[in-house]
Structures are given as C-alpha cells and as structure tokens.
Length: 337
Image (cartoon, rainbow, N blue to C red; front, side, top):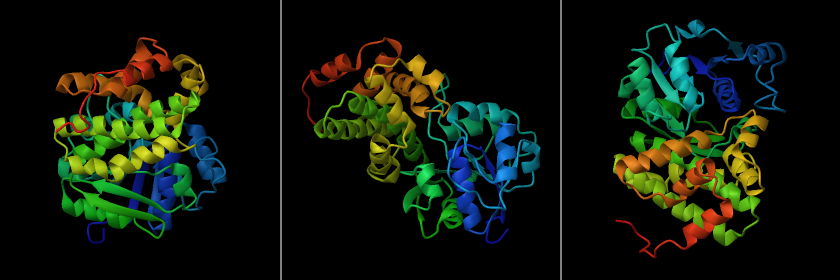
C-alpha cells in the first residue's frame, strides 16, 4: 500500500456500475477483481471480456478478473461496493473475513426498506464498519457514459478527510473528476432521493408534458430532498452540489436513467407490477419511494412529490390526478426556512 492507497482493489457487484468502475480503476493502473452474484456474468467477463447484460457494447480490459467467491476478496484492503441498496445487507451477511481494518467505498444510492437505514448505517449494523473507514462516491454519473470515458464529475464523502482524499486520488483521471466532502448524510440522502424525483420526471415525459413542468419538478423536488436531509443532520449546501442538484438533473433527464424510464412507462399507462416483470435492471427509486415516504413521516417533513409517487405505487391514484393535487395544494412561500 502506497501512501495508504492499495494497489489491489476489489469491486463487489458485477452490474453496469461495478463493471464500469472496474474499467476506470484499471485505467488508473490498479489491479482489479470484480465479484458478481451470477456465474454467467463472471464467466462472460473472464472468457469474453464483456458484460453484455449490464454494460453492452463495451470491451473490458484484459486484466479484469471476475469471481463468484467472496472469500477471494479477504486480502483486499479497499473494497468498492456496487450493489443495489436492498441487497447490501444480504451480501454483507455472507462476508466471512474480518472487515475491521478494511476500507469501503459505496456506490449505491438508496435507503433500506423497513429499517430506513442509509448505506453507511447498513454497513455499520452488519459489518460493524467504523465511520472513518467508509466513503460514498456519488453524483451525476451514468455507468454507460463513464465506460465510454465521457467527462464526468462526482463527489466522495467521508467523516475521515484523509480517506476522502485517498478515494479522490484513486478514482480521479482525465475523464473522471472527484471532489471531496465530509457530509456523508447529505450525499447519501441526495443520491437516494433523486431517484424518487426521477420517477416523477419520467411520468412527466410519459404524459408528454412540457419543459415548464419538468423545471418545476426538479426545483421543488430538490426543495423537499433538502428539507429531509437537513432534518436528519445534513448540510443544506450539499444539496446545491454534485450529489444533490447535479445528480437530480442528470437522472431526471437522461435516456440512461432506469428510474426516469420507470416513470415514463407509468405515464404511458403501464402498472408497476408490469414494469418490474419486464425489467432486469433494478431501479432503486421504486423501493426508495416507500423508505423516503416513511422517513418523511418519521421526521415530520413535508414531501408532497414523494408522497404522490408513493400513492401512485400503493394507492393506485392516476399520475394525472397526482399532478392536479400537487398543483392545487395550499399556497405557500417558496422558501421553507
């Protein structure tokens, strides 16, 4: 390990984001091994140097090695977790080697159902991971574009400033710029809740509404994300940055956004059950909607857009009716503090 930075890095999660980040780390001259749950994925990576299911049309580096065995990652001091939030607890429970002296960078954006835990809280609960050994890497970054080396800017947050700088050094290059922060709560909340707003954005697209509606949604969506984040302990300024506004813009507008696409299909008339059956990729915003709604009630925070997406999913109100109810709410001041 040089200056606290290991040469060998393990990536836990063989989806599009985990695969794309593995390519980036290899481009940065690190040795990378990636873990995937599906053997068909690891076999394809090892034999063909492709991941056609999660990252089509991308040729992977020859040096990328894939494995289904978590025990093979026991000697890695730095682990990158690229697993959907709702599966993190299950995967962590399968880790048999000591984690105390390892450092973990999380790429997932979500809130666990039932416990309402952020990812850092899940890892503390399951692995007893110390806050100083945890960082989140988040911001406006689609795996497909990072894999194609499209210029991308993100933020890493850790309670340990030295670790944040190490993460910055590990990931930064000419097409991937990393800023640092100490606001773990803000970065986790921003990354998770933007997926809920992105579903609403997709509904607007599915209903073929206009730019005015989309701009209103993004602005007021950011307001309610900020309200909840501040209530939990985040810095309000974080939500004006990459993990807040930046991520919200890209997820609400991009063709690559699975959450936006879920909303678009709902706007076109499909049910959530139909969408889940037809889609292999996981849209974190579906499960996060329920968690965010419950968090808002727990902390007494008004989140009208999140509440309407929750009602569309659970109470089967129509998207058109949800919009009418949002537009005819009691008039208010714009600012909430």
